[in-house]
Length: 123
Image (cartoon, rainbow, N blue to C red; front, side, top):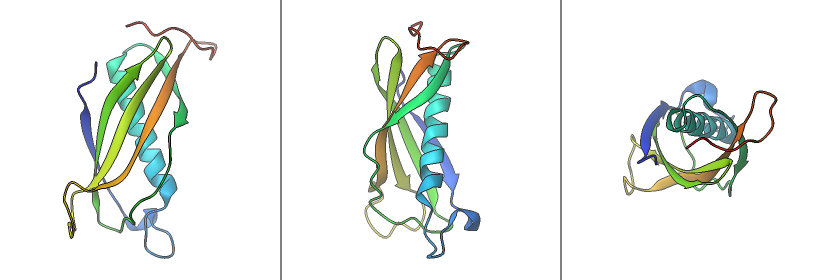
């Protein structure tokens, strides 16, 4: 089982909306990418697709230049699916608690065969 991984991204001007805050879609894209990297490394040689993100609630605005730390840990392995818990923290411009979670969600992947059909995970 995955003990957890850490990844980082920097928020650039092209990631911002007209109010200077991070577009939420970029954050969701990065979470999907980081989750996919984790499941690919945890179960090499198998194919996975994203099937769900739990509760998407943006708690705090994220500004240009913020370095985001993504903590990703495996929380459940089923017969054909795997769920990871992803937390996002700010590593720069810490005006509050440095352990404050800016965003978190669970992301679930399902294992598929070459035809795109669900199949059991080889553990």
